Image 1 (tube, helix red, strand yellow):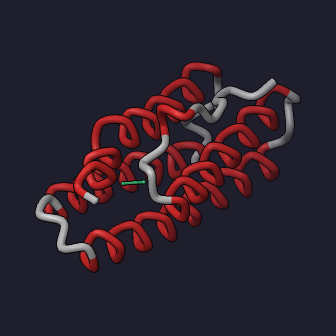
Image 2 (image 1 turned 180 degrees about the vertical axis):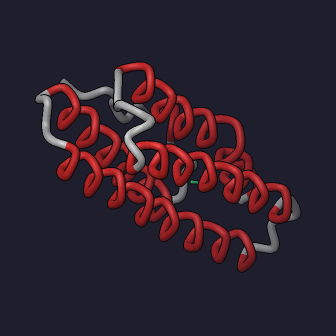
Amino acid sequence: MDLITWEDKLSVNIQSMDQEHKQLIGLINELHNAMRQGQGKLVLSSTLENLIRYTQTHFTNEEKLMQEMGYPNLKEHKKEHAALTKQVIDLQNRHEQGELVLTIEIMQFLKNWLTHHILNTDKKYGEFV
Ligand code: FEO
């Protein structure tokens, strides 16, 4: 069962960004399912790595788009991206060092990590357009 389901309320009304957000949701669901199936550390590590890589790709694409549209809150948005990226990299480091076990609480954290950002921050550039 998926942890996050795409809903229309998550739409920022820009198709390319909605697609990328759907991809991120898919990667969090993949990690969630791997955790539920009791997959080994290797599988979890590589799934987490894919999530981080795609997060960085998405943030870069989104920042480029906001720059092109002359979005006035770009600087604050970039700061939030940097903080979000740090949070997942910290998780990854702790996981690699065996200090962190992926649990449903960690998955809930990732769910909120993404959905709060889309709902509270990303939607603002959607409204600006
Ligand atoms: Fe879609 Fe600002 O991340």
